[in-house]
Image 1 (spheres, rainbow, N blue to C red):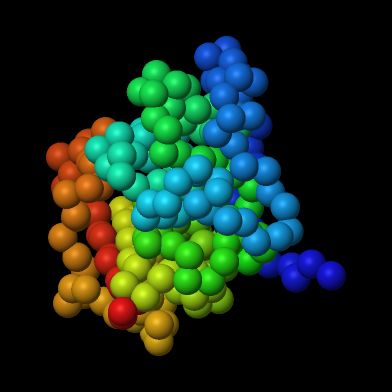
Image 2: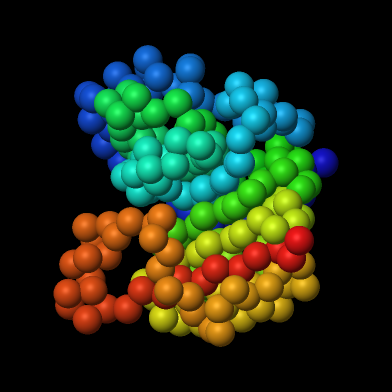
Length: 223
């Protein structure tokens, strides 16, 4: 029997452009991984042995594509529920000829719970998750102790979890939740400097010009 959980997203009927739809039709069969309640072999999924990094909620995929292009020696398993974003990342995969990204279009909690083996990931990225800023909606936030505990188990010893947000109260919550997870250790004192591998998004650059803050948190599972 499936264990229920509060979903951290609402499926919106966003418009899928013609180019995104073509990418969904032509590239998803090659670069997509279907959800199924069974553990997967990540090396088999990518066809090679290489460090594996999970990304939860990649939006329109620009950051995912840029990181994957800059790090061809690493494989990126990217999770997103919204079709326009999936189509957008697939389009970039085709244009940039990226072979080191695979996409699962499904709820991230269920993917982690049912598909990702323990001690399988070298890293995990959660960049700018939905802040659910209204008080009555904060229970929908993705970063909660049960998810972090599960994600920590999926990391290899020495693996890292990198979260970034531009909402200060969410940053404070995330830092508290990550700090309370016994399998994780903060690599910084409080918040971390933005690692070089995470590019600045256009939205983030605009926010920084306006004086808005961005908070990065980089935790590791001790080796």
